[in-house]
Length: 65
Image 1 (cartoon, rainbow, N blue to C red):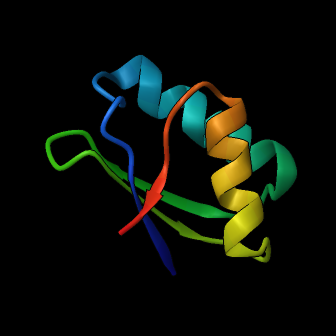
Image 2 (image 1 turned 135 degrees about the vertical axis):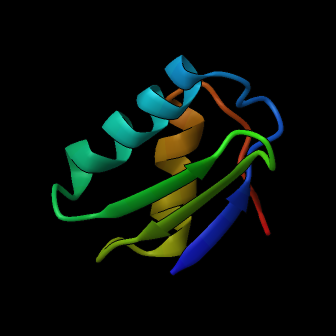
C-alpha cells in the first residue's frame, strides 16, 4: 500500500475527485482517504509514480508520506 500526503485535499469533493481519478486507471484499487490528516492510501496494481501522477492530474499536490 502506498501513502501520499495531499495538503491541498480539504473536502469530500477533493477525496471523491482523487478516488475517481485512481479508479479510472485501476477499477480494483483500494483508496482510503483521511481528510483530517490529508492522507491518501492506495493499494493498486499501478506503480507509485503513476498513482502520484493521477493525483496530480486530478488537480492536487501529492507527496510521498
